[in-house]
Image (cartoon, rainbow, N blue to C red; front, side, top):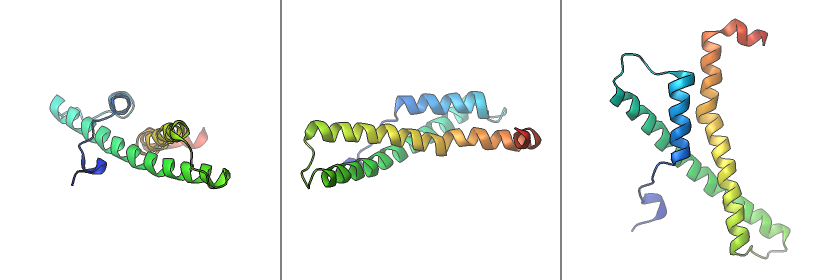
Length: 121
């Protein structure tokens, strides 16, 4: 049986761009790695984050629809409202996952390199 969850998922280009930017500018990769090794890590991280965003967006979307239904006396949202709720859930999930899985790495990397500067800031 083929379900949405079992289908291959294309890496989100915006996530790939964010991962590539963070790893090539803010975090850096080992200098002795080949271009192929660097690309493999970036692709792996982007794939992982894409799946995490997808999962989080599904959960948040379902919760939003349930809350909307409760606020509207048990009446389910129409297709346009459902679509808007799911779109908002995806944006929220993207923000949450990028912050926790990618952008917080920048802060922890900065703390590791300059613990005194971070504490005094």
